[in-house]
Length: 214
Image (cartoon, rainbow, N blue to C red; front, side, top):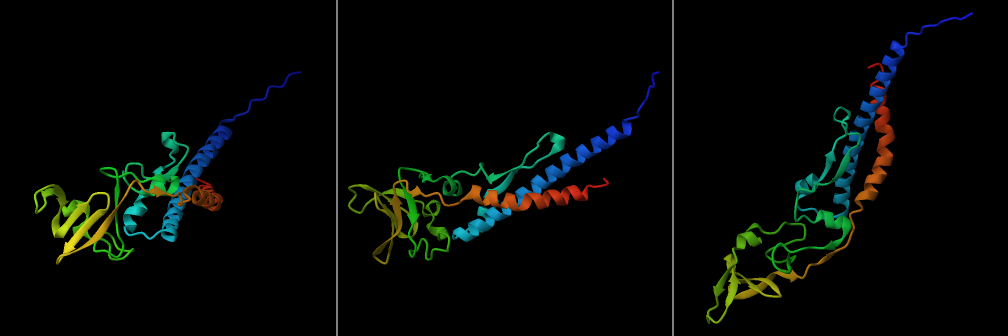
């Protein structure tokens, strides 16, 4: 005797598909939430470790580079330092290395306590930034050689730095360094790993629970 049994599995397939879809979206949302938590933790880490003069700019360098999106087939999320910004110091604080000069062979560093940077916490005085000083080759009084001179009594002594002459007194406001070495101190990966460990279980539970019955 043979007994044939027909099972309508359409409801089971539909439910399984819904569960798989719910899992995919919950996972993507939890990943994105976690990356935003990491972004915030990295910004807090900047405040703790460094004296930040341009907080808004520095915070924007730490960003979510890619969000997870199941509709577009992106099953992961990325957070990091904005790779489109050139000549910023933040990547070197993670990897270490030598600071490359914008022009020439040396890096001009403003001297704290000088007119260029009166205190460590302050930004460079706007009128004494390199682009504002308008340094140009000018003949000296004796007309024997050319010297870089700029506005507000500024002038360059090669190999030493930038000086400013006020009422006959010359004071150094920048010192030239030959590609100063930057030590790694940011700990970007350590901060990210710790934050992911804290955030991921909670974020996934929140997102998966909220989609129940959807």
